[in-house]
Amino acid sequence: MELHGQGVSSGIAVGEALLVERKAIAVLRLLLPQDELEGEVGRLRSAVEASRQQLQAIKERLARQAGSPHGYIFEAQLLMLEDPLLLDRTIAVIREEHVNAAWALRTVAERLQALFEEFSDSYLKERRTDLDDVLGRIQLNLAGAPGAHSLSRLPRPHVLVADEIPPSEAAELDWDNVLAVITDAGSATSHTAILARSRGVPAVVGLHDATRRIPAGALVVVDGERGRVEVDPSKPALAGYRAAQERDRAEEERLRGTRSLDATTRDGVTVRLLANAEFPEEASTAALYGAEGIGLFRSEYLLGRSLAWPSEDRQVELYRGLLRAVPPFPVTVRTWDVGREDLAPGGPSSANPALGERALRLLTRDPAPFLTQVRALLRAAVHGPIRMMFPFVGGPRDMRLARELVARAAYELSREGLAFRPVPIGVTIELPSAALTVDLLAREADFFSVGTNDLIQYLLAVDRTDPRLAPHYEPLHPAVLRALKRIVDAAGSAGRPLSVCGEMAANPLHALLLIGLGVHELSMSPAAIPRVKAVLRGATAASARSAAEACLGMATSAEIEDHLRRALGLALGAGVVVPS
Ligand code: PEP
Ligand code: MG
Image 1 (cartoon, rainbow, N blue to C red):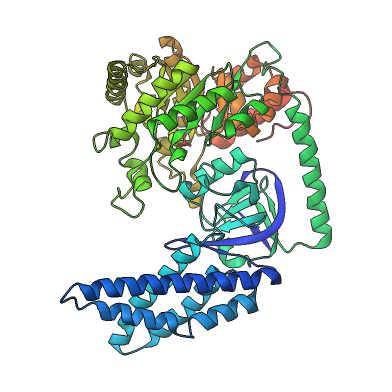
Image 2: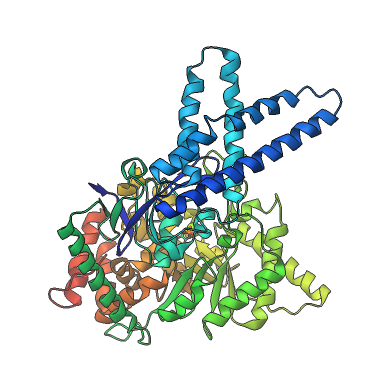
């Protein structure tokens, strides 16, 4: 069986499928070897026993509260726990289907829930709520038990098959045991895709129903370049994939060898290539790929699944760690780019979160985490060249707010006698309103970085997370080119440095266009650096400039892409195809 989606992180992976289903908590579906089954049975028994003790304690507490009529509810739940329909059947599923306890419980739960649905008696029907409550409790006890399998602790390398992976879970994923990621939802600029690329893990998204079609434990081949997933491939096909995997590895080795070379075009224009990073550990990978610093550190990933803001001292240490990994180069930390929905999943949020309360807009709600972060950045600057960048800026008024925040942090630090240094303050140009006011923003900001991922989404009114809209998400749309040209020119006239940190920077063809438009600094996932560098070294800035000039007069992204390929492919030498 072959499935087709959008390849968002290149490379080929071959491995066993692990299914993830998320309701209240993520439940993994693992196929286990015979000798691990009794361990799962033991885990299930312990979780049921822990649930029994908790319910008993609740029941007793309620009984002590005179007049409380609710003890009977827990009586019913205790009886359910002891029902052989639940425990014995779940054990049978573990043994017969060779699956983990959490998945076996989920299977039995589905059957029991269906049974309850069939009751005509409304009292019995009502007991469905109790059943869900008991099942949820056992699942939580299973997940919390020592040695439990979870997304942050996978038993061995797998291909992850999920509906989607929210950023908080992706941040804590046991990436060392993830061979590839494939998801039903997602798009090229969704955060799962960005993380997979930064980890060098092949990924295909937008598969719609992969979680229903791929059986747990099936052998899966993921081709992240072509967006193809093959389930249970034939022997010859598998051999072909393995050979391609080897070729990729050799090519990767060769490209990494360009680490110490400059990204200089044949006519002598040097472009600075920096790394985007989501996790502190990635900073060393950045150095490995020859990045001249970190151009974008997405600090909100520090929140992780606990959604707790790290303390000021902890942040100072983390930012210092980033500086230590890439000396003497600068590190640009983007301040928290979070929405209300990220901070309180399931809580009240805007109907359209991408247009809602996020980043600086949350300042009035609770300035504390923002102030703490700015203080930590100013303190970390004592140890090296830190730059602070504000995301989701709508115009000069937002930047004034940001500047006030920084001034307040500096004032507090000096009053407290803590060492700090002023840092350059930048703006991510990612809202059309910011793109149109770069000249005004230049009065408030020291540097700019263009976030093309969001700029394209907002300029074209295309939800970047919706796979159905992928054909409408056009980085080469004439409006995008014109906006970029305007931004670059305005920053140049104001004498402010500018880089591009969105995914366009990582696409060699788009990178050449950006150089042609006058950009001299690009920031991308570390693994993309060697390929972009190789293409830049083979091209001339003059040909990129004339190609960009011609493209600015064209009407569709197809024409623009075609022109770029021909003009720049020719400039690179006969027969060279610019990879996208
Ligand atoms: C962008 O919007 O281009 C960007 C770099 O940030 P993110 O992808 O995290 O929104
Ligand atoms: Mg953005």
